[in-house]
Length: 371
Image 1: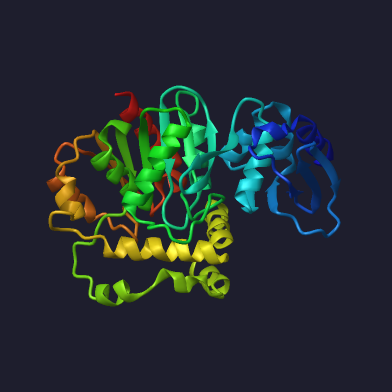
Image 2 (image 1 turned 90 degrees about the horizontal axis):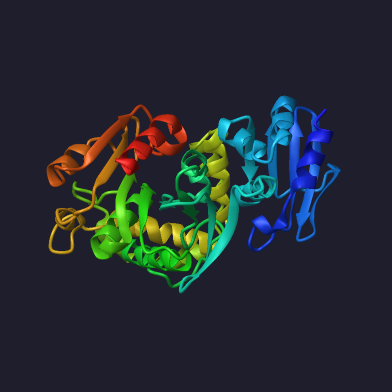
């Protein structure tokens, strides 16, 4: 029975942990038993799970729920260890767990010229700015928050166009645009500079920040970073003609994506986050604009990414996945030639090292940042 455990969590819930406060229904499940937590500015109350559609689902064993209720940081710790699993709207699920954690994890928004930027934040000390990849959200860095918040102020953001951040229609959605917004996030957070940790497209944004606003970046951690293609891009002339605004039209993508990515665990939760944004017109437009810009990122010439990369002065750690099919590990040898002083770590994983190999990834990050 988990009834007493979830009632304890609801009694401990602090709505002020989320800015703005959550207004949602979260289904709390252990096997065949389920309860709903209804949360709002008033706090949280447990009601019957009577068929009403929840905004998010958190599931686990009865023992995981009992451990979650034992201490203020129990729910977030259970999430980090894998005892609790989230589906559907991860912003809402994280917000509920954060609300039970006292001074731990919190959700907030930062005002920028792109609109409100949603973030998950924990810890104090030197700032770590965590930037997700294409189609992702701040939820992909929850393991990083859990691993580093004892020594750093970790801020994981939803980029404009993704997650719960604003989704402007006419934004450029390229690396310089995102770098500028990230600088505004640091301003809003009261931080002069940060260690920047970026996954995939977030890594490309981190590189852009280091090249164009050097003083704002202390060190770079690049997790399977998106790099400009070195091979011929035969579809480039066609892609240049495509207009991302066409994505504002309805597109039935969910069945296709579910078949392409039969996932579970963190991967399934990440797919929920992707679809939650992509099924909205503005979310589709942002995703497709970003994908187009990644494909068209010039490798060579005065403004080419690889040409400019030679000027990178920051200490950098690159983490590569041997099973990564999106950014193959073959890119590593090109980075080694371009940046001889950079450090590299190879892991037996795919494209999201902080989720797939969290222990090795975060041990390497901690060692690199503290050196």
